[in-house]
Length: 194
Image 1 (tube, rainbow, N blue to C red):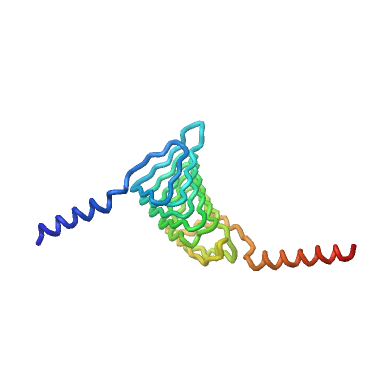
Image 2: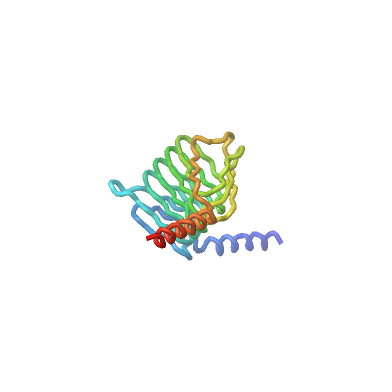
């Protein structure tokens, strides 16, 4: 029985790790649907800035260094660590379980903030969150993202890093619709007076 369990565990590990590889990125790159990586490290290649566009795929561990930039949408990253002056932009349907921000790195959460679970902010890092009805509570921030989805992001620090969080209030969709229709009526009335 013990031998069978060992063989089963070995086969399970081999079959699950088949598509996962490591990748060190020094130049612009793309990660798309179907791409699976165990660990990805993104570096700058001075004097050029490395930009990685991730429009799908799955990464277990991702580290971004220097002034490199990662644009995420429609992807999954289990653990993301940002260092130095790196920049991460999170858009629609990007699932990130844990983000650790170090040094002077910056993370922008546009659409898809509801798919980010936990964040730790250290040093001089900045977190920009776009949405409406945004509110910082003890150890979390909550509100509606730009794509009109409710979210709560937990901060795993032992303190509330409020000076490192910048909330960008974007008008909710119904307000934009109301303003658009009101301006249409005003323009229509001005044309009728002429």
